[in-house]
Length: 284
Image 1 (tube, one colour):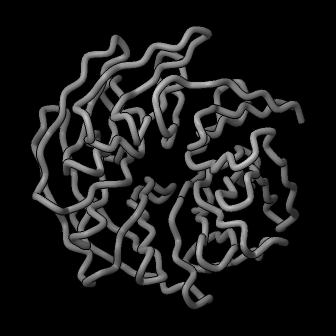
Image 2 (tube, one colour):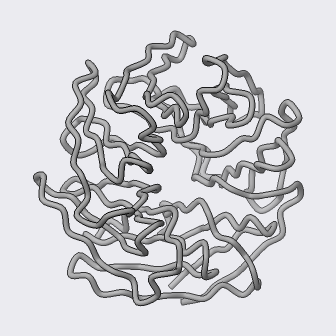
Image 3 (cartoon, helix red, strand yellow):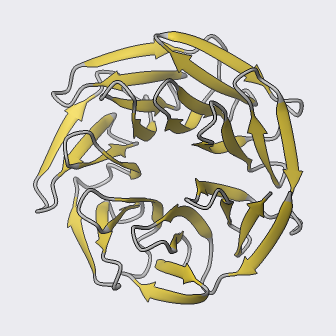
């Protein structure tokens, strides 16, 4: 596996995704900016201190992202025009994902809710029915529902587009799930507290303990072959696990890199946002 790294202007690369324009889009959580990488790097300024975190392509051809520190959901076009929409004070938006209904969905970590926002900015919120569950990230599953990691409840939640919630407690205590991703057959998630990667299929949960239980797995991305990639935030690595639970690990060149967000490009490359100030690209 070939690993290349590039420096990114600004501070704190955190979320990363491939946009509809084929470029990489990266949130800079500490400097309050968004970077677009397509050979050259363009940096777009947002409101200082807004804390852009997770970013994803939306259903409308724009990129949508959470603004963790000022309780807003942001939107930026491929041309760099940014807007944002206010949420309740202190709700702590974090995860964002395109829903199965043509809207954008997001988590409110501090409020125990998930929300739905249309391209026109109309917001609807849904309680997950559990105080202090700390919903972190979410994804649309192959079953057409939203799947959410409940970090402090050590569980997953399945939520329909009408707000019906089903919870799935994880077998391992203090698992603290964070990242989540889905393919047509399964939902994968990272247990940052337990040092495991998990998978749920048809309501059945399988956990795969990492060789290094202190690696702090954070983000996950499916590989298109039944397995998934993940970042090891505490160990400076990117890992891969097959559907059978076989692990491979790749140490990143930058010491103390702190890999957070992760995306798999249409060309098959795996890209990770390193909070130390770089982007890592892994290619076979």
